[in-house]
Image (cartoon, rainbow, N blue to C red; front, top):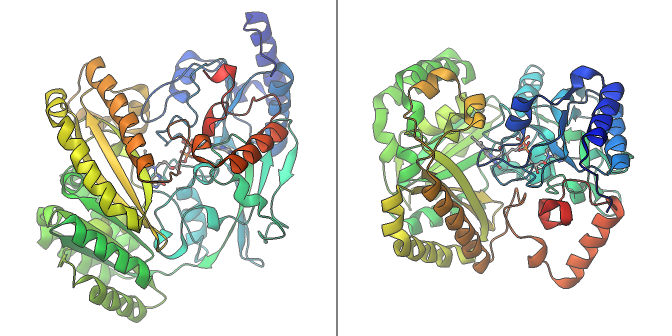
Length: 529
Ligand SMILES: Cc1cc2nc3c(=O)[nH]c(=O)nc-3n(C[C@H](O)[C@H](O)[C@H](O)COP(=O)(O)OP(=O)(O)OC[C@H]3O[C@@H](n4cnc5c(N)ncnc54)[C@H](O)[C@@H]3O)c2cc1C
């Protein structure tokens, strides 16, 4: 690939060309902005030479053409809510594409589709569709207040709607992707049809921006169902929790669900329960309820349960079922109870009621309950491999117990079914370390002020980095797959030889200079070292 000579005259020339093409306001070389946008929830990377914020597909194409001509790496960033180095480019000297300006939403009620700019947030999309009585099948990750549709689809995500409709990928019909040449490529037959021959839309789901920059995406629509029931169950062992989760997945009754171990239930989720947030939650519960009586009943249940619900057992499973009428939602909840009660005990439903009321909560959880630094990692295991992985993880933690205690490193776990055959087993790691500009940008000042602050802690940070690597290797030993691969999980080496050769040729065809998010998905070139 061509390499850009880092001489400042070349840099200045590209920056002025970008400013001339996009307008000066769409291009920034402000040091604080470069630093902030080069950082994810876990860590920072090399500084970009500029950030661009195109507001139209044509402007995005033009910016890509200029970078390609200059031989400069291009890195797309959506809401920036990831933590797997997806847009963290270690070498620096790139142009960072901030897609937030691609924020148009076009609803086509006749074809039951919505076409969004890649930078549209899930919260903005939900607001727009709610007013029309509509929704998309998958309707966003918990980070949807800032997470974009383009960024989410680029790394595969799971949460809202995933119980019934799966991860983000099946909820996309077609995409318009700007390739490294600046050409616009349309996937799918038309905006309303995905499958017309081999699935080109699927190729760009989970690509972490290594194959191009998504400009527009078309998603299918469903009628929104305002009636719901929230249910929570506690289990005294992981085995019982896992059996219950599998049974619920096979029954296919919920719109979404997630499991928590006791550490996360009392820590990260418990942190939402301060007095200030309670008032906000109460207002949101009333707003999300189909009517005032249902809202008040939910608030009374939550008040009566108080903190007890947060620690009802070793593992908790929280579920939301929907219905097009109150009777249907109740009937589904009754069926689900009969599936789950053989395995555990029903507890108060404050946690899923909170999630339903505030599906896109502020990103306060990017710091731990006592202001610790936070990084999650995950693997998707076939159900048959879960017990073996769980036992191996317990042995892994036991071997490191003394070091983790000495360095104040703590962990928790969260779970979600992936269809009927897989379990997403997510680990959250916390350690005491200095907060960054990222946390100051996503957590409001009042919430930050309530949390303890810590000085830089290089020893614990280095330990966590190694711990992460070792945990990623443990996932691989048990055959786990990953969403949001970014630069954190090995993908290419785990493909068999024909598949690896195919995707390498594909990358070379779509991005011959190796300039599109180098290093993401493991497509390494000399700039990504
Ligand atoms: C508090 C919190 C809660 C979270 N909850 C969930 C959850 O419930 N479920 C879940 O799956 N994940 C979750 N995440 C992880 C993450 O937020 C999501 O995966 C989210 O969807 C990422 O979207 P984003 O727009 O922020 O992407 P970014 O972080 O901006 O980017 C992600 C990747 O996509 C690429 N990219 C971005 N935009 C484009 C584009 N237009 N074209 C091509 N490539 C692009 C980037 O280069 C990067 O590789 C959570 C994170 C946080 C901090």
